[in-house]
Length: 402
Ligand code: ZN
Image (cartoon, rainbow, N blue to C red; front, side, top):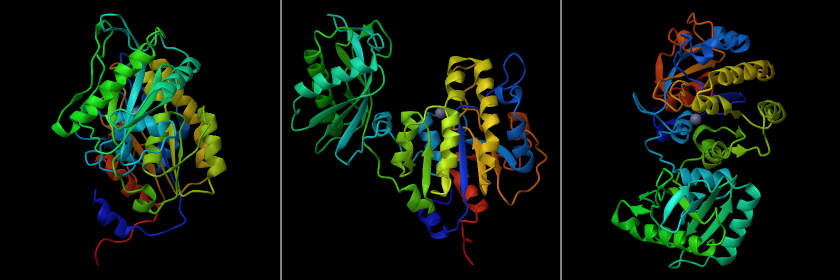
């Protein structure tokens, strides 16, 4: 990547439109069938795009590095993921619509169950309902007081999940999670990894003790785990960086949060893939750039459920003509990282990418899958460079130098 400072100098305005589709975790490796999920799926519409466009692979972070969805999305949005680290707590907070300021430290929290000895017997408090969660957060809000001059607010999420936001001067986030990570283990408290974060750890731990006190009669939700404690990083807005009016079409909180963090407008209230594509059509005249997220390819990858992953790919393919019918100048389909069903988790394997713009070379690839991507013109590139190619194809970058 040329770097943010150089890039902004090259950006020029245009009325072209770019659609970036992220099929989360779609990249795969062959299972016992000898094929990947994309190779098994019947995808005539994406294959047609592949024949017209160029293929390749992307590396989210670096060779051999397995990424989380946060950094790998950030890279696709054109930011160096190593320069802009975003904590899980921040993503979760943004995902439920909170706006974080420079004095806020956010944590992704779980209601959990602890026994009298301090052993965590259920990390999800029996997956309490979202309604119970709401009541518990209200009870905490009524009873929580400022801790050493730092206010704490709690916000309910889905089921057992909530977000805690600590607000005050002098908070730092070089902190370890308060989570034993397995049931049947002793509860953990937040640990600071450097001296200046020690006070923040202390405040977070006082908060956990307060939660235990306030919820002592609310078994199974009688404690909480705190993870991904983080402050929001300063980041150049997507609009300022690329000169694009950008819209995020996603249904899961974290992806909405990430989009909001980089300054995209986020559409709320979408649940299904059909909803998402309909919304894209509705918003098409209002923006220059659309990020559309397909979540279930990753979820089924994590479950090791190959048939459902293939089915999700096929279902999405059926919606593709609704998108190409809008005639965007540039369309890109890729994944943020691979989630092979045999691994049941994210992996380091490069991701398939398809780019179709008005100025393509022929690369002979004629289907959207990993084997065809090997023939692709783009070879293997870093995800953070993808936006530059999309911008160039969209006629939105000036020449560098004379
Ligand atoms: Zn992902």
